[in-house]
Length: 210
Image (cartoon, rainbow, N blue to C red; front, top):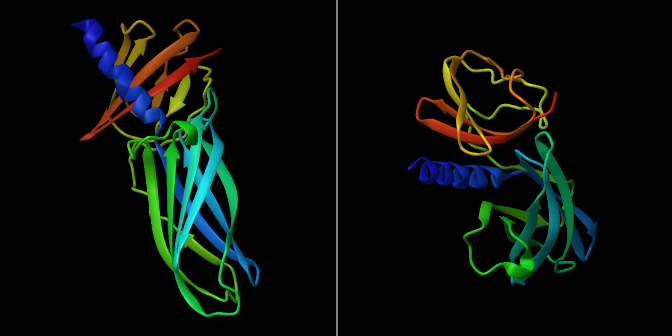
């Protein structure tokens, strides 16, 4: 039973690692025949840009960007730029759909790996750059943390229940944390943190390295 619970926890951790979000989209005109779409993304772990593709049908533009996960960093942020052709010399209103995936383009089979999506309108010609900010859900557990970690985390919350598991799924620490968590007494290694705050549950793998 404990092994099953640990596997379920590990599955939640993996899902959490793949929490990738669109932060901002910026559109600028490169030339009368092309625009540049600047895409800002962010995730809770290190990740890498892998590839992208686009599809244009009339005034509909779709950009699909593909990312793969990395390892052992603080909260990560990436900016990528995509050149898209437009109809020259014509005033048009375009519909831009940006989709981001945590998946290698070559192994994408369906939309299961779709992490976030943004849809907006813009018109050409562009007199000035257009900044389009994507609304990100306000998560009370969205705190910044260092990974690897020396053994101290400030979660900026009051009365969050924190359970720490070792890499074998054994509970090594459990407390009702008030802003700060001290786990520096544990030996170096990989731990899984389960945070519970109200109806929110967040699972985070953290490497302790003193």
